[in-house]
Image (cartoon, rainbow, N blue to C red; front, side, top):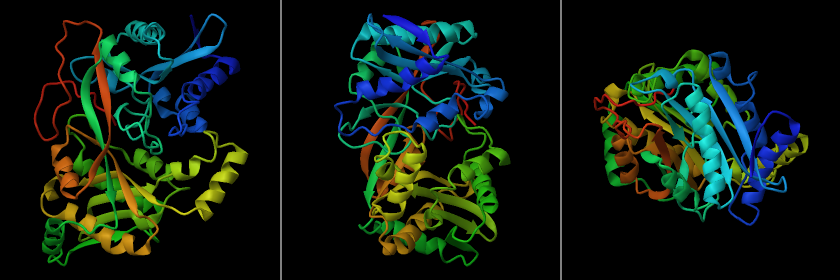
Length: 399
């Protein structure tokens, strides 16, 4: 077996071909879009490179030169310097069921990160935001993955844990039948907050993208900014996030709560894009775009993907969460464009939100794990700190 750096067209093609080999008999597999992954490793498209971030990719070939594995390692310009320890990342791991092959790939990540001065690595994660390509699937291998979410064979868990990775935090994904009415506790809480006439919940239909980005930034920073694992977001980042959703945005399912003119909560959803991307075989080239736009326009939608749910800290526990959920029931459900929702993902370090979602009558749909490995085994391992609690742990702060 031989490791090859991804540095030309041939090795780049092999990098993507590995996934086709691993999942050729898996009927649930829906490939990530090639274009989504390529832009992550393109210095012209990923701003982290301009801020001092680094990334490298490798493929593993067998004795005949056939690709049998792949992996990437990267250094986030800010998280690698946060906390007590310098932590790098690895991800986009795919490998045949062979521990020797897998360990060769992981060893290469470790070696490269050590050369960059890192003390450990998290994985499998993304060289970018946490909303995509984050975590290892450990529960529910019988349902197709949601757009941008990792999916992998069952044997990957044993590989990571045998190599020495430890569970840094769990990522819980929930499912709910939208035709089932909200529980009475949500109805009551929504009614109570609704007595305040300065409070309202609304959709974003007719609202310009710049204003949506401003609302998103306000709530995000007041809900998570400064908490362990979360840095304050800048307006440029908020604009980019909303801009990236432009093509597939459904303003009827972008829901915000306001106290007067101030946004204090959001429940942001998009259509489950994998219901359409299943037809493009992981490639959004010109033909793939035509097929995607056709199915986006004419295929029946079923699933609404909840990408983020948040409430400003000073308004948490005051019924805002319930009001957002009740509004979705009263406004979104009657349109009958979506009949189920997948809520992705909530870290086990966020017990407040887990309680809200559990009380909604959801089903724990799938679980992913973000692992951490210290290269020096004498360094004490601590799990991700719980939001709202003080900790001296390195939270791996992400923007």
